[in-house]
Amino acid sequence: MSKLWGGRFTKETNKLVEELTASISFDQKLAKEDIQGSLAHVKMLGEQGIISTEDAETIADGLQKVGKKLENSELEYSVANEDIHMNIEKFLIDEIGPVGGKLHTGRSRNDQVATDMHLYLKNHTEEIITLVESVQGAILEQAEKNVDTLIPGYTHLQRAQPVSFAHHLMAYFWMLERDKGRLVDSLERVNWLPLGAGALAGTTFPINRERTAELLGFEHVYPNSMDAVSDRDFILEFLSTASIMMMHISRLSEELVIWSSQEFQFIELDDSFCTGSSIMPQKKNPDVPELLRAKTGRVYGNLMGLLTVLKGLPLAYNKDMQEDKEGMFDTVETIEGSLKLLAPMMETMVVNHDKMREATSQDYSNATDIADYLVTKGLPFRDAHEVIGKIVLHAIDQKKFLLDLKLEEYKEFSTLFEEDIYSVLTPDNVVAARDSYGGTGQKQVLKQIELGKETLKK
Ligand code: ARG
Image (cartoon, rainbow, N blue to C red):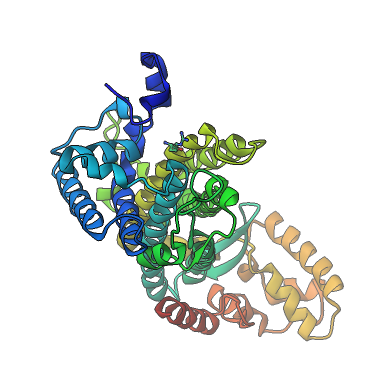
């Protein structure tokens, strides 16, 4: 088959080379963006008088027809035509004849592919932002229902201080809010149009790049043609943001796995989000959070892959850059798929209030509160810490919890103890007492949920 670039060649391309260099098997995902970019380009060419308006219209019509046919799977891509750009150009020429060959005037695949990638990421970043918001909505919903649900708060995975379950969940709301912020920021860099940079040096035709940018909804045009065709920072930025987001999703998933274990029994995931075992009939496995946790690996891998591809590349375009696509598509699909699952899984999860509460009353996580109690009675915190350490040791020795110790026992450690110590020690009061801004006290948590709702509405 004759190549679009075949003029200079005297031999057929080796089949294996064709397979190595072709990207059509994966970059066909850019078909819509490629046509969108070409439509803007050809309109600009017509308006600038670089080609006649009739030709521009014929080409635009042809591109629309090719687009429709592709949507209906009426056309077959060919490896010999290498990539999505040349496949579509070939379809166009088949559709409208040699005039289709005018489309590529003043353009190169180098600025074309970069444009397609910008368009693709622009659309998907917006989609991902919406999906992040749906997960945040699911978290808010659960949080509202669980302000008074108490759960042990952990450090070092050792019980530390009890917290409102809503407070724990809301921590993830804010992580996702920062992820969203990073996505929104990254759009600032995605919003630059490379088209018009040509192969690397610009073009001899009197093109109007601002007009193409306007037609495609880009806010700026790259001011340097060499940078325009070799920049992949915007993809790296997306992959970095996605990696941080997957790390958050993985941490939440890990907690869901732990909480639904027999040992914790803090939550139960809905049957529709779990799977069974082929041998052990009693099993209900949290495969979804396990896989979300695991998929973090490929997202990090895609970031490392592209960083490594780009490292040391001389300006401007190099074929190496074709390797930017599969990782990006994979990351977009992984993130979108994960967020789509996370929202309903969080919404349908059943919270075992009793188990959580039981856990908060069967430990020493109210110890800090006794120390704070002595501090309010005038003892320096360090001394109070020492006293309570001894009381905890005594209680453990007696196989008792702190609420079970008699007032006489307390008085043996400090004469400052009075009857009011007991009300300080109930889990509800321990939580309520942390009324500082951002703390887990129910009043603060309610305020935090309100702030979350307002933030989500913006
Ligand atoms: N398929 C190529 C890529 O994805 C398009 C650009 C090819 N340019 C070239 N000069 N070979 O990077």
